[in-house]
Image (cartoon, rainbow, N blue to C red; front, side):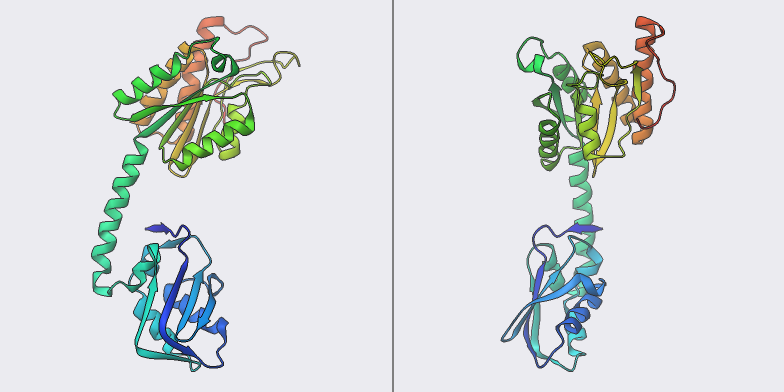
Length: 307
């Protein structure tokens, strides 16, 4: 199980003295005890009776740190330039505090932590945030019918869903809002609108900023005319940041409704991101074909990968 150290990356040993020591060797001994590369641990402070270390990476395996206090002391005792008293001890805060755990307790503590982590992950995955978008919605010219529908649909499938607000037609602003939502711990973020061919449409690009490998299949393609159609057509997006899925659907209510239904069906079937994106796109392509047919200036693509 991998743990995020957050800002707590320091541990210190009390009851230890250095005499003409090579600090690189001291750090390497501690790194070896933790199963880390030598360059990922450094000595950051030496005081009478105390040596402090810093772990130079944010994520560690739980098994690397839990109960490793005694092993750190033994490695330090093996250095001729380090004097370790019989009462020496290792201390830290946050996740690294488990260094001082008694080895006999490690298995039970890690099993409990893994169970708790799974429960937290499941709770996060069932939290959803829904955004509307567009200056016309912000100005009150168009009623947002999509968000209430999608929130109700998500809640009927067991999600705890809420409205995230209305996104501006501005790429930087959208990216910032989505980054804020990611930090708040939502497992699913859904956007409607802003996925078309006009120059103000930027939600696909925002998701690609956060996940450059996001799946963005075409729904409908145009020949850009430089006036209204500045891009090749309409796309949807399914991206991922950590455990969070980001989904962008079209703004027209019927398309948002159909896209939402396809999204929920795909999630229920455990589809991966690529299959989920293509399922949503397929449903919406059929909608366009039924609605307008396929005239020459409307090219409805078949199965399309990342766009």
